[in-house]
Image: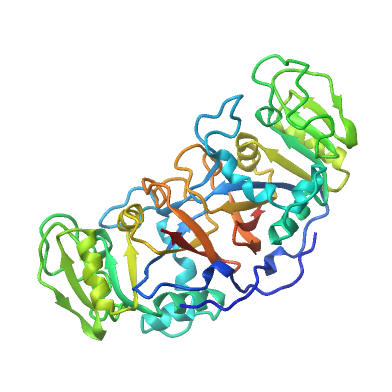
Length: 232
Length: 232
């Protein structure tokens, strides 16, 4: 059987049209074919678990990711366009404490995140935590604000900071699940990576039964990107 | 954010070109966003489990499925084209006993399958079972042959019957998993349905770590079809 030689390209589906005026709350995340967003045995040393880095290889190959991180080179592919797209329009981020890193419990204030002096967010980031900490201002416009009074408060603060632009839930899985389960997520952009991890952390578990519809699909040889709108 | 108004369409990826001469062994199956191909609590009365029928609604809506089952009407969509495509080129089928139905144990020979006098296969079908039974010839060219000596034997018989055309593993999940785990599957065409079933039977569990690559993606508002080639 021979397929026609079309190039990979983006398809936008009719349901993709039209968004409400308020900040959309979005999430984009890489997921294995068997549903895992991190490998097994996550630890401080291995924060995305065994084999979990394989979920992200497609990103690191793109020129877009390298440019966002101050590096040269990389490939220009349809995946690059997706990587460009996912940072466009984001006015603020919310992330879980594990994603910010630095271990559990009371903060070690020497920990400033995984990303060095100039993190790639260039926007306000709200970190969900049970332990208070003063805000951090980093180079390049990234600020980390530590929110101890729950996901609704973090979202509200992020919406205010985003001033009409998108609020992106950066991860990890637990933060995304909480927002999805609470009906606060508007858009879930899955990058379906053709690997079978066999074990690890599932994204779509204990999230209730959200109603979603695909609004955009981008296919590449490395990964299939499907953007879902959450129907409220 | 406004997406351009493209129509849903098929993308074939470069890796899709080129197939070897021998019968490909294929499987196409509908899967929920959280990885289930049947709902929980499967039974003789409810063979695809609670909520499992929601996986197949997209099929029943198509004119192709209705025509294949001798019915008029239905919608003509990109999903119809997928439904047409998945029966083209198939020379023989293999299915598990649960998919053929009729309960466990020694055969009740009055059970002739779920599909009535003229099943929609129109080809030889090999049914995996532990209990011998004489072959059945149905109207419209479907024959059911009951194979008691394992999945390799069933595949070999199906290949012979298919005479160079595809052998399709029809399901259920257990049969697909066995062929995938044994490295005998060449192509897995997933119809990713935007529903969260929360529980049921997973497809990609206990299948080892197959290496797959997407070769074709078809997007529609109802379902995202991704065809994977299994790399041997």
